[in-house]
Image 1: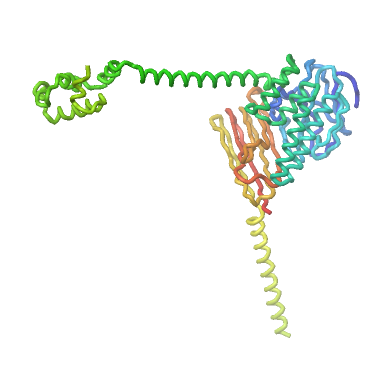
Image 2 (image 1 turned 90 degrees about the horizontal axis):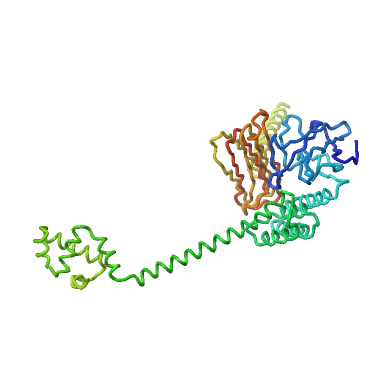
Length: 313
Length: 144
């Protein structure tokens, strides 16, 4: 069944009897969806013959290179079952496009796509090298002490960054960078995003969208931060200015407004230097009530004595 | 002669009893001292909210094995495994929302074995979105 005919994906896989003899091809719209599964993602299926050969017709695919996933179905599972990790891992990622001849040979049994070699095209060979390097590092790291694991993962990140920086293929560069797990908040993300966009100013692929959006988002978030800080400073200056230079009369007026109706009547009499007895008779309230009002007025007007109140114009 | 018979009978009883006792102790000891298994079944309905299952890993744990099986018949479900440093160790998303015409369930499984896992709280984050289905989490912790 092996063929180099354009628009065809041919493969060979060694399966034991726990697998159904059918392979599924799914479209993966973004790197974030690599471990997603839904009915809608499955775009084709192909029978696997007794020798393990299968063939997908790619003539209906878009002309741009996109990411796809081939997966197998374990007996008893549904066709929309993804098994991640372990001896039953059931999938393989690859790049493909219309009018392309793709050939692959999977030599593992547990898991079936444990070791895969692509004869064509080159992009999948590079892609496979990245994936194998990640699996190898993860495997060594999982067997190691915490310190050694940290060294291994740092080395892996460096290797991925080297591929991302030096690859002549935008998809490979974007994928290698995606696998570094460098967060968009990290300075290295912004730096890579900038150089990536300089290298590939216009791209027809959707997989580098996070790298292109990030720059706008980053600039936007920085702008927002600057705006917020400037507004804060402006409010502080205005507040200080109001407190410092607001006319005294205006301040007093503000304070007078805080007095209750009865307190204002008492306040007016106090300004005329009226005694507690005078106020009591004028307003027809008890002396103790007058004293209470006076105390409250002194406090609200922020003055120490009745004399100070009388001085207020 | 009779005495010898009685003696042999008593001896065999003693041997049988001690062997039985040893088996019991070994079985108990293995389960209690060397490994700890946990299984959790979580069912979702469309009103279910995100949930985090915490697996506490002690300093003496040498092997941490975690299997997660997610199955939904409706909605979306995202599952993530994160270590105590919040590093992602596995994830999947399953989605049926765009395919209401299908009745078949959508499934994803994670099989993960981590030697010398980072001690602390490992988190399995479950984020259902109008999901109908279930998640089964099986963990095994093996001590030194």
